[in-house]
Image (cartoon, rainbow, N blue to C red; front, side):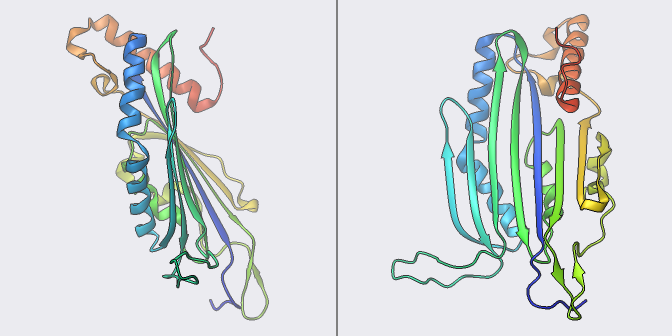
Length: 252
């Protein structure tokens, strides 16, 4: 299909994950947050976004990254579709951004009255033109330990065919799940919440199986009694369900 001028549809992907961990003492919880801050510092996030930009075949115009106190980190990329020419003597790039931006922000957290600490990552990808960021989902999911995943995707604006017909979306989509590898999907309970007439799509995913050792920080599962193991798994599952549903179902 031939278009009149530039394809100016904006395709925005919002990718949110939660990782959960059982840290028994407040000291363990603080050490977990410190561990996450080190593992996913701004330098590591920048590398992840660099890989994402390469998948989008976008040119990185500028990078801004920051590690925060007491915790958390972020990175922002301005990207373009083609290599851009410098318009100044010092090499500063001044040009129209036809691929927009990528951002990431992390949120480690814990509460001393709860033995479960969480790590949240928000990634936003906005592109203009024919390219859709949905093709990067397998890479994003694989870049983090993802117990809960929420993916929002929307297409905004319109472009025109050569005969003047407006196009409000330029590709077929029934579910975001169609853009995720089947082996990944099988690990989760997935729920779609779509508004097709508004080109708004959402998929929420909750991990099916809990391998307890993968969720213990500074603790060996073999050192715990069977009753303790079952109780921790139940507490983890309850915490996940509350976060997945966005309600305090089990909290006092």
